[in-house]
Length: 295
Image (cartoon, rainbow, N blue to C red):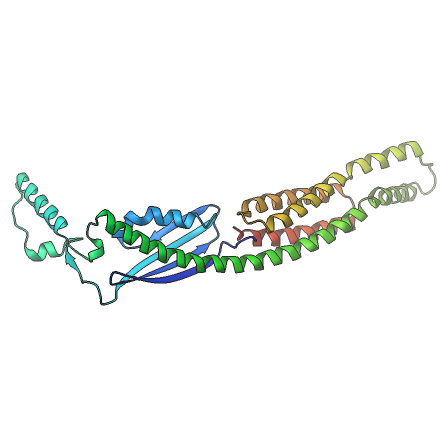
């Protein structure tokens, strides 16, 4: 079943004294774009988190918000000794340029990354794996909720598009029935026009008249367009029930159907048939709007 690109999911995981919240929002997008907003010290985990999202989502813009709060069981801010040493060494190096002055404690305390949460300190390999697993767990739970909502929205989109495809197929049947009558009606109108202009004073050359009608019948023949249009409609129905992302294929088919309908409208010199073309174009535009949100 096709999925919508619109969805929302959230989760909360408690780990090592922190309450870690995950919030995922997705909207339609031509490609798969994932944007993370999370504490800077967790940048090293972004690659594995990104792969987890990509394994379940094919298209759309996904905003991933990850925040943490101390739940009272973890330490407060601690001193980042490595960063303090780096600042002191930098201050010492600046003196070689003739710059005077010393760093006070309050100066050092105001510098970025001097005071950090315990999770912001350098981690060994074992600690990194524990944090990575915890973040992946929370992300997967939020993704479950996001995918459920995308599935529900997708089912609504599919039902609406299928109803519009039913309407298109009804219009297609009517156009197929009307198409053979176009040359005959043209023949009648042309004869009436000639007789009206000549007022019975001139005889109609049946040979020339027949050639004109045959030429018009050839120019106005839309059999090929109607056959291709029928094929595109059937392919649309099949796409809607595939598990893989189908949004781009659906968009392509809608463009092709629009092209066939426009050709029919330009070739058919028939009022009723042209009215069906207008109705079909209106339905195709509504389908295009809905399909823009299909993954």
